[in-house]
Structures are given as C-alpha cells and as structure tokens.
Image (cartoon, rainbow over all chains, first blue to last red; front, side):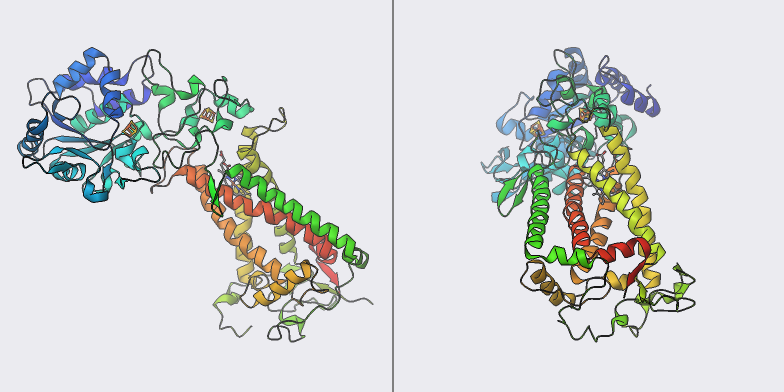
Length: 409
Length: 192
Ligand code: HEM
Ligand code: SF4
Ligand code: SF4
C-alpha cells in the first residue's frame, strides 16, 4: 500500500502527464477492499455546483466510477437519484447511522441573513424550509472530518463578495470543529481526491495557517511559473493573449499559493491560465474575488473621498501633488524674494523668528539643542551627547532618558 | 573669531547619509516593482527585487541602530513630535504659505521636521513588518497566522507612498530654507 511518505512525494511531483487522482483512486479502492466503504456526505449549499462538477466531470470516467464505488457517497444534492422528502430522509438517516464515521464535504457558503432563508436544501416533512444553515449545523457536529471544498465554502468567495446581500459566510464561521479548507474556483479534482485520500488513509494532512493542506497549497505560483524567466527579464504582456509574463496585466501568481503550474488543469488539453496567456486571478486566496480584483491590475482599487480610484492613479497622484507643490512653492519663493534671501544668506545663521510658544522658548536655546562652542569640546557632558574629543559619542546605557524622571525637561 | 556650534554628531551624519542612499534605492526599486518600465537590460525586475530586498535589510539594520542610538543618547527628544508643537506647526504652515514673514523659533528641528521624522519612524516600522511578510512568501506560505498577501502588498505600497511624498519635500525644504543646516549634515557644524 502507498505509505504516507510516498503519498506526499507523488502528490508534490505529479505533473500534467499523469493526474494524481488516477494514481490515488486505485490505491484508495485497494485499501478498502473487503472493508466497509467510507461514508461521505457531499452537502451543497450556496454554490454554483462548480466544485462538484469539476470533480465529477473532469475525472476519467473509469476513475469516477471507481471513486464513487470506493466511497459510499450517501448524500449529494446533485448526484443522488432521490429527491424531495426521500433525499432529506436519506440525509437525516445517514447522519444518525454513520455518526462519527462520515466525512462531510461542504460546498458553497452559508447564508445567514433572514434566518438563513436565502439558501435551502429542501423542506422538512412538515413543509417548513430546511435551510443551508440548519443543514450544516445538523451534519457538521457528527462528522469525522469536515472538508470545505471550493473558495466559497473555504473563505466566502464569490457568494460572499461585496455587497454580499445574503450575508454569506464560509463554513468555518458556523462550525465549531476543525474545517479543512480546499479552496479553488472551481476546486481542482486532485486537491479534493488527494485530501480525501489522505483523510481516509492517514488522517488530517499538514495544514497551513488558513487550514489548507500544505501538500497542495504550500508553494507559490510565481516560484514555479514557466514564465518566470520572462518576469526576471522584463518581458511583459500588455494584453491577454501574448505569450509573455502576465505581471503587468495583473497576474496574482506572486501572491497565490497553489501548485497549478505543475498540477495543470484537465480539459481537452492540459494547461493553466498563464500558459493560456491570461493572468492568474488568485482564486484559491482567502480574499478572492474582492481582494484580487481588478483581475487585470497589479494592486486593488481604493476609495478616495468616496471615489473609486486605482492604486496606479493614487501613486501618480502623490507624485504629481508633491511635484506641483514643490514647483509652486519654488516659484512663489523666487517671486517673493524669499529664496534669494535664503541662498544669499547661505550658511549664515538664521535670523530670529516668531516667538509663538513661550512655554517652550525661554530664549535659552540650549534647552532645545546642543549648541556647543568650538574649543570647549573635551569631556563636556551635555544632555544628549557625551562628547570626548571631536564628535565622538560615548554611549551610556544608564543615561536612557525616557526612563528618567523627567528632570531633564 | 567666529563662533561655531556643533549640531550634528558623527553617528548622526553617518545614519543620515546611509539612510539617504538606502531609502532612495528602496524608492526607485520599489516603484519599479509596481510599475515596471522597459529600460533594456540596464534595470530589470530581478534586479529591482534584489535591490529592494538587499537595501531593505540594510536599511532596517541602520534604522534599528539609529533608534538605539537616539534612545541611549536622548537625541530622540530633538525629533519627537510633541502635541505642543502643534501651535508652531500652524505658524510654520503660515510661513510656508507666505502668510507670515518668519517661521516660529525652534530648536534643532522645527515642528514640521519633527512631524515628518516622527512619521518616518512609524511608517518605516510598518514597511518593515509588511516587507518581512512579503519577503517570507519567497518560501511559500510559511506564516503561522492568516494574512492575505495581496492586502499586505497594497499596504506596503501605501506606506511607500508616504515616503514618495515626503522625501522630495524634505530635500526641497532643506535646500531652499536652510542651507546652513545642510552643510552641518556634512561637517557637523554651523556658524553661530
Ligand atoms: C522606505 C522604505 C521602503 C519603501 C519606499 C519601499 C517601497 C516598496 C514598493 C513601492 C514596493 C512594491 C509594492 C508593489 O507594488 O507590489 C515594495 C515591495 C517590497 N518591499 Fe519595500 N519598501 C520599503 C521598505 C521595505 C522594507 C523595510 C522591507 C523588508 C524588510 C521591504 C521589502 C519588500 C519586499 C520583499 C517587496 C516585494 C518585492 C516583490 O514583489 O518581489 N521593503 N517596496
Ligand atoms: S468556489 Fe467558485 S466554483 Fe465553487 S461554488 Fe464558489 S463560485 Fe462556484
Ligand atoms: S506570469 Fe505571473 S506567476 Fe508567472 S512569472 Fe509572471 S507574474 Fe509570476
């Protein structure tokens, strides 16, 4: 059987040529021959079903069959044949029967507004609505493990994006036990099958601070990107479709932690956004999509005095205001003759100024500055500087004056 | 004989000029990172990223040594903005906007300088923390606490904007308002 060490190695090394799922599923099947099939509940809440479809659709048909034969997929809003009361009955029954045994795969957000009535999985026998909130609170406490699959379930994602009319939250916000986050919009089947396999064979995988399995979400896209050479050498696409580094059109590869460049996505051809000449949009990130947009800009937009502006414009604005301010002041200084006076005075000491604050200025300048006449330097111990010889400072820790009693002020 | 006064100690001058070099490099490389332009082979993103990282660590060292120096010598009192400087600051603004002929009397640094230097202290610490986080991602997501890196990048950028605005202002004012003090930053001395 595949050891955990081999698992990690295979998971990290897999490239597009061989999908991880196709290696793992037979091992998983083998491990459960003659044993009770591991029960799984796949609960879809506020979701576009993209994650379930990503897993089911893109697996090789044989593999899909083998996977669904190996695990006991007791409940799935999308895949199950039963509907209505029958389906809800199955859910309730499974939770009781497989208590502490089943793995809960939660997909989508949990809407909280209006008592959770923005999202429901069906009805109770008495006809009242069975909300997503109720469903997750019902299934989660009795699950052996909980996997939040997709960015919505993990972090909120599109369904909790601004202005979030349904008050959607990710799964871990409404569940007390540990939630293993497997984000992605949609999620990659390998990440789901890999995490599930790890849970079934070896228990909880190593997680990062966002509770994502490190084996998939540990490395940064930018560090494995085949266009990295272009980045380093300044070969940048200015429009999508150019075969160059997409940094200048907002690539989020430098701030996104996942293995797309080596994992690749499965379709007609193996590829991933950057190799398809479009920027990574950082879909596995906790602040996707709000924090990652605009997708085609390096930095997020911001609100200045109620107006939406790009970070670019703010940068240019600061530079322009500084330049204009200095320019205007310079012109005015010349016009009023102030500049002339200062420069002609040169390094002559400044004339006396306006005395505003009498508390501070008792005419005794030594209270404020160290004015030290030349020739008197040796061994003079002034408040701020202990000078020995010309300009050398001796540091005395015991003279830390901010701990002092304030006598010195 | 003309009397001279010593206002900038040697460590102070060293701190000042090394920081000047480093912060200039940080500004140039940093804004190149967020706005790469084609300069041929002369300056590319790999160079900018390297300069940003190297200068950042050097400047951080200089910064913390500077803080230590100012604490033990008490020199931070020349720099710290105090609430009572607010009145002087208003007066200073009036002077800068040509509403008054003379600036308020001040000690080693005027109220505006105190304000800017104090802000640099805090903003640099902020840039240091956000910069360390940005640096850490070179090793994957290794942080023990959850932060959204894109946000960190954005806040680091905002902090850098503060330097982008205030550094040129500082240079301009020092050149036009008080060349004597600039000279002192080289020699240590001003004439009484
Ligand atoms: C005066 C001080 C500083 C200025 C003006 C400055 C400026 C900048 C700017 C403008 C960026 C680009 C942000 C973006 O658009 O993505 C940047 C990136 C960065 N800075 Fe700084 N910074 C300063 C200090 C620091 C410090 C103290 C550190 C570390 C200890 C640091 C580390 C970094 C790193 C690692 C990056 C990311 C580079 C990359 O994207 O590969 N910086 N800095
Ligand atoms: S994470 Fe993406 S694919 Fe999954 S439910 Fe949300 S929007 Fe759909
Ligand atoms: S395309 Fe994106 S991930 Fe790849 S090198 Fe460029 S910025 Fe980095």
